[in-house]
Amino acid sequence: MARLADVLASYVPISLPTHITSFIPGVTPLSTTPLVLSALASYLAVIFGVQAVMKNQQPLKLTLLFQIHNVFLSSGSLLLLVLMLEEILPIVWHRGFLHAICAKEAWTPRMEAYYMINYYFKYLELFDTVFLAFKKKPLAFLHVFHHSATALLCYSQLHGKTSISWGVISLNLLVHVIMYYYYFATAGGAKIWWKKYLTSMQITQFVIDIFLVYFGTYGYFASTYYDGIWPHIGSCAGSETAAVFGCVLLTSYLFLFINFYFQTYKKPSQQPRKPSANGTAQTNGHGNGHAGESWASSPTEGRDLNDSSPYNLAVKRTD
Image: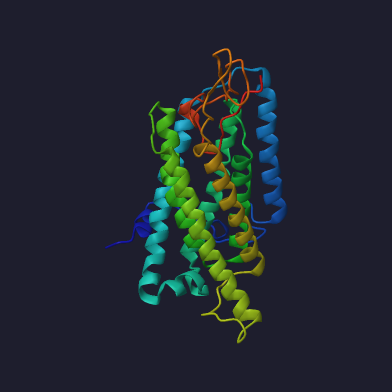
């Protein structure tokens, strides 16, 4: 049976240049640190600039564009996931899982091309925030940080050629297939009940990611600097900088998403009302019968579900 990658390649009418299918620093687009940092700085300037421009304007719906954007990212993530698994699973089957995540040979030319496509997807995903800004939705720190830092993470792993990348990327693609479908569906008015479980899936993803990257990083440092002193079962391919950066960033993601989960879905229950001398119920020590009101009593209430984001917390009223 013909591979899906070969079938798709047969429909490409031209031969792509090497720097498009292989990561060549300084030649491949967005392949140097100054260019990447400039692109991400431009992203921040654009979203906060749009936010400032829209301050006294009516929010834009942009429903059709938003749905097209999400359909492309959901279906594109699914296709890329299938292509990556098609390439890596035979390596797992014939050489074992450890070889697949740690050996230099697991960084095949096709896997590198897939990693590049995934990397460029991260820049397309930055438009998630642009849509939020035009819709005058809150730009939560988690959303902005996660989007910009993930592009930097993918760049660092391409530059460092970490063979373990496919494990992290495959999980991320799986989550994105579901997440961008969620965005598409809610933009059309669908009521999705499993939003809470989407966040749980993201947290699970980061737990697995951290196990993989800590395992690979430990193996590299143990075999390189402490061979015979620290126990290990072999080294993992990739640069030290890419490995450490991946460990630090993915750990920060885990804590940020756990914090988001508890703030959004595990809100403390209200204190029971106590009767006062005049018969008026008191809550939190106030005798006027008004508890401190929040802008939204649930993660979705008070927000437009059609373009809600799992990153955006309910904003509390200050009046």
